[in-house]
Image (cartoon, rainbow, N blue to C red):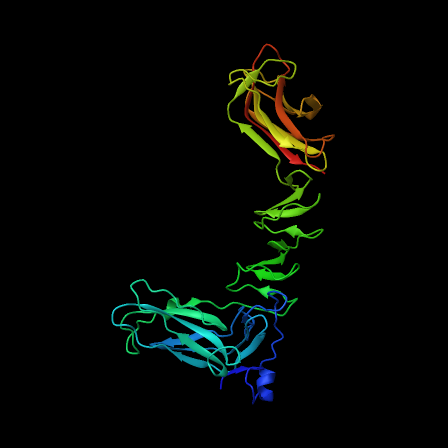
Length: 394
C-alpha cells in the first residue's frame, strides 16, 4: 500500500505508518480545523512543491510522485495526515465517443466512521467528469484534496494522444505548521489564518494584518517594496518607487537625493538690454521661464542655470543668467551676479553655474524662475538653449 495515513484504520496501524505520517503541519483555519494542503519542498530545493507531482504522462496513464499532505474533515472529525510513499500510477478511462470530458485526480480519505464508504483508507482516485459539448470539472468529493484536472477528448484511448496531459490544471495547494512561512502555491487568494502569519508570494514576504496581506518589511527602518500598495505609516519611512528611493515627509512621498526635483529648458533664443535682472526676454513669447518644485527634507536645493550667451557685434558686453527662488510669494533667494552663469563675446559661448539655496521649509511648494541682465543697454545680449535644474541638497 503506497498511500498511508495515521489514526484512520480502526486496527493495524503500523509503526512505519505512524513514522511516515508525522507531518507537524497544521495551519489553523479556525479554532478547531486546519487547512488542507501539501507540504512544500523538493529534493534539490529548486521548487516550492514537488509532492504529488504529475509525471510520465502517456496515453491514458500517468504517475504521481511521492508526497505528504494534510486532509481536514469536519470540525469535530479532525485532520488526517497522509503520505504517498511511492510513485503511483493513475489511469483514466477511455474517452466518450462524441464529447470531451474533464477528469479530476485527487487524494481522498475514506473513513467509514463518518461516511458510508464502509472503509478506512487513503487513496489516489480519479473522479470521472461528464462528457458534454461544454465539459465541466466534477465536484471534489468529501474529505478529498484536489490535485489535477485533465481534459479527456472524445475517442481518447491508450493508442492515441487525445488526453490533454500537457495542459492539466495544477490544483495543489500548500500548508505548513503554525508559525511557518507559507510558500504560496495555488492559494494566493486565501486569507490569512491569524494576525502575524507570514507567507512568501513571488519574491515578496507578506504579513497578514487581520484584513489583508501586507508586504513586509513594513516596520521601522524597512523599505517598502515597489508595487506593494502599502500606505505610509510614519515620517521618515522609505519605499522603492519603481527604482527610485522615496521618503515620507508626513504629507507626501519625496524622491531621495540625488534625484532631480525639477528641470526646465528652452531652445527659443531671447534677448535683453536691461542692466537689472528681468524675468522675460524680448524676441520670444515673453513668458517667464519658471518651474515648480517641493522643498526637500533638508530645506536646501542646488540650483543650476545655463545658456548659450552672446552680444550682437560686441566682444566685451557680458550677459548674466541667474534665478529667483521663491517659497509661495516669499523670495528666498533673488537673482544676483554672484549666483549667475556669465558669458562675454560676440559668438555664442555656453555657460553653466551651480549654487546652493537654503532656508526652505521642507515639503513647501516653491518656484524657480530664470532672470537675465546685460552690461550694455545699447545692444542686445542673447540667451539661447536656456535651462534651470533643481536638485535636493544636503
